[in-house]
Image (cartoon, rainbow, N blue to C red; front, side, top):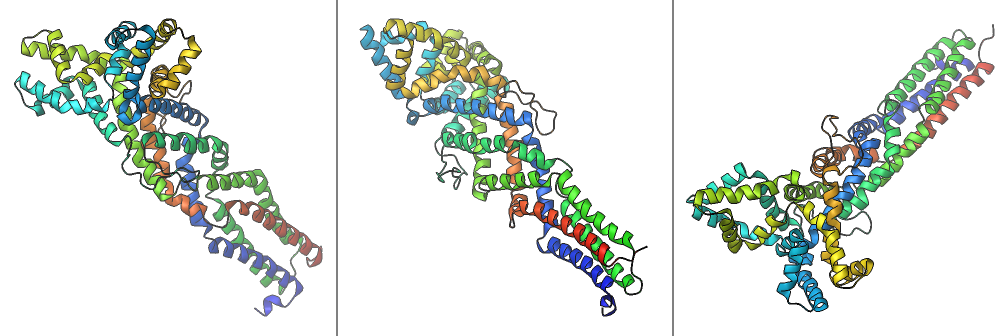
Length: 503
């Protein structure tokens, strides 16, 4: 060691070695390699969700999902309020037209038969309550067991069976979603307990973050990612350490020329150029903004709650998909179901329907109401009729209904938007699953995207996020790298003038 410090030149080269040693210590002490490795895995997993197409499609489909919740929430349980407001609506029309409640229902049935049937089906959880009784009745008249009735429905009438089964699970969980204890909103930490609350968490908290930080994640994923940065630093540090020790040993005997110091200057220039060309300042600043924004989203309780909550949203979509449009299939199965029972009992289809209605009136009403595209088609003509009959111009009619029957108005006025967008929820966006093979267009395929792709970024990436987000803040690395480059460049330039041997 004494020989390495015997001359001014050797001591100068030990300065290079010291800089390299400090860089190596910094990389190892801050555990930059595992931290940036975790960050790279997280970026690789999340980057597909932040493409322009998926961000736009996610925003559009989330809005459709929110509207679907607005439709279902008033109709599903008595807590939703629409069932109570049906009587209010009938009373309003009865008083204005001076007719009886039965006559009001006849008017509604004449002007909007599918809508009137939907009102008779409320609350929809009553349909779920009728299913056991209906199954028992069908088993009796068909001379079979209840299990065989269930198997027949699933085999021959799968869309009706799917909707009825999902309806029970949806109704049970709607106002008390299982498995989301501890999930709170990002602002004010308001607890999330219901599907409408869960909808707000995704629509108003999570999706806006995806939209806002789209460019930051795209920039972070560019230029080869970030996982290589600690290894690059380690190579630079070890290189400077080795080169400095070698130069010090050599300088103890022979003073090196300017070429050796030019190599040191080149290393500094290379580091500065890398910081500038790879855009470390905007990329790492964006990374820190994204970390700060998503830190509460990646909290364990929120990740668990968000993942579990999607199971209930899935059930709600499983319930709605067969009923929403003709393509859903349930409306085509209804007449086939009545004919199936009629053929095996020697009755007519009309007699079968009447007997089913006596035992399961809400279920029959729901089957009469579908597909809900028919309800959508009836809303505008019904509004025109009521506007004329009640002598309330269009805006006044809507204001009156929203004031007197807010839940019912919310549901019925939103149905057209939902049925119109159900099969194209992502809008005019060419969106695919993460595998780039499966298209995401309709709300059910967006449900698959949420449960199988997007939520996986939160669940599988939580530990990587925690590792990547620890102190010091990630954007501090860009100025440190710039300072390192400037110091090495200036040090090499000064030493080239002071201690290099001239030729």
